[in-house]
Image (cartoon, rainbow, N blue to C red):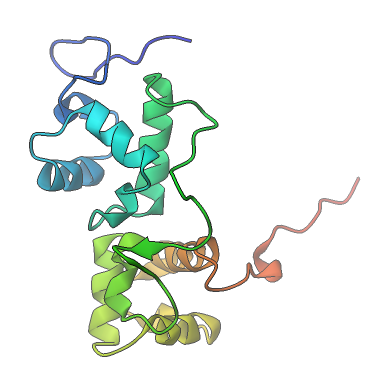
Length: 180
């Protein structure tokens, strides 16, 4: 496997001791901005440790898609193995010391979704719970939230399924192709 090289002005192999800015151009800009904000003096090794400890989901604005991109990058840099899963990885997502349940306020979804999506949900449901978000999803009313869009709705659905708060919708699976 080829080593992962920075996309910066002075290319070098990415290693655990590299500062997070070495991942500029490799991870999306929004993810990098979040990581720099939360880990101002962090290294790529710190990022790998947070992934292994299952603590990336606790960083505000770092959603499931960002965590998957970080995972792929850490694998490419040979800092984690493809089979590595965060400690305690399961379908129960936690925020600090408690599991996220249907009774949690909408703000608990920050560990599952991008900040923008959660902010839009909070504006729509200022005193709402995760259960209210599930109801909006099931009734097809998430599409009425201005700015959420199809991608945001898909992220909400994926986050709710991955966390075990709802079951996958069999209607959303692609139909088997017929042999022609």
